[in-house]
Length: 489
Image (cartoon, rainbow, N blue to C red):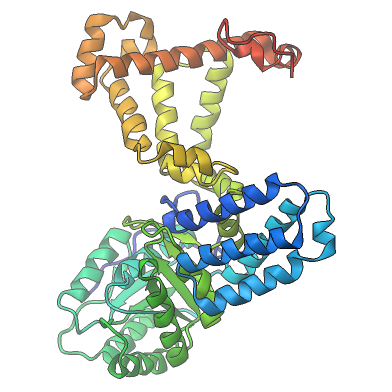
């Protein structure tokens, strides 16, 4: 018949947005980088001036307008955005405030949140009788089928739902086989392929199977076209009428810019979509499509794809995205990512060893692994307030592969004794380790020096204790000759 869900898939459902500790998302929000760089520069200049005149604010908003247009934000959206900000920013209350530049940034931040959809992520609607039909629609090449697989994994891992994937695409060769393979990777069931059935017949068979086999969610992946045409819309409308989907999710490619907005408007006018999933948010630095989507369609962006991996699907939080655009970071998102990926028991064990000053290279390797689980370092940096400039300085230096992975390779090439007692690693051992890890002796030396500095700092912390650290300050942890005459903090 068809592939069964794995054991435990029928566990009591959790509410959308809850965290199982198993599902984790990696990926980097590249999509707003260019816009963030432009706006950060504008507001840095505003904050640096102290007192502001109305002319200063209007000039800054002119630059913001150009930045938004360059980011491919729809012109009507830009007009409304600038008008909204100008109305609040040129008032006497702002211009006479102690920190007028910061006040303007706050107003722009509020306007960005509103444009992106308001406070808080809009979750998937799971408040319906099972099986709940989810209808996936969009143009060919938007990543619709892959997104269906990602969504199935998300529902199974995070919410413990039994999911049935069904391909309604009879247009594209091997489309149904592709979805079956994705279902297998996601650990969910797929509807068996019966040749020569119409999309509506497949949809009705999927829903009947869902009822009979007690599935929680049935994801219906429709066919796409290279462009919008009446045949496509008629087919999707017929499927919608036959299945009454609780969610009609439009999948659009963020890299297509204004075309993505036009696609969203056409599908929304024809079908009334309940939510938007934006793919390739890791591949375009402009981001205008996302900023335009809510205003043009009225439908919320619910999820975003941030990579090729099956787990690269994230909730869309307007307030967090706005903060990252303006260089304010996303501390909440960073904490959530850490809680999803870092093993609590391992972290506590490591903390105890660090407190005792018994930290060794095996622990250091474990630490590198935990950082790697959280995703790319440039992505993590983007979630820290004010880290945009540091991220820019890093440029194209692939810090993740060039440092984390290489250092992990160096440590894995050491013997157990070398990891426990790095002091025994002399010239001949360094050559062997470098050859085994595909690195150089200089890189081995650099790793050992970093580890030695870290170990020395931990031993000093252990010796000083909390009271001693408070009394002597952080300067007491610095290497000799670097602490100078610093006063205790």
